[in-house]
Amino acid sequence: MNKAEVLEKVMAVFARTSEAEEVRADSELLEDLELSSIDIFMILVELEDMFGVKISENDVRGMATVEDVCDIVLKLM
Picture 1 (cartoon, rainbow, N blue to C red):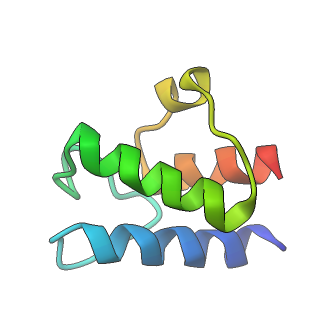
Picture 2: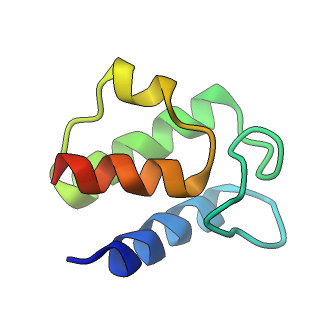
C-alpha cells in the first residue's frame, strides 16, 4: 500500500470523527479538527486495527497533523 492510499484511509477515519468541514493532510489534529485527546486515542485504536500496527506512546508525541499520523502508520507497516 502506498502513501496516497494510506493517507486516503487515514483522512476518511478523521473525517468521520471530526466535525471539521474539510480534512486535509496538513490539518492539525487539535486546532483544525478540534479533536479531544479521547477522540485521537479512539482514532489511533481504529487505525491500529485497520492497518495491523501498534502505535506507541513515543509515536504519538510526534503527531500534530493528519499526515504525521499517516507517516507513522506507514513506518510501522
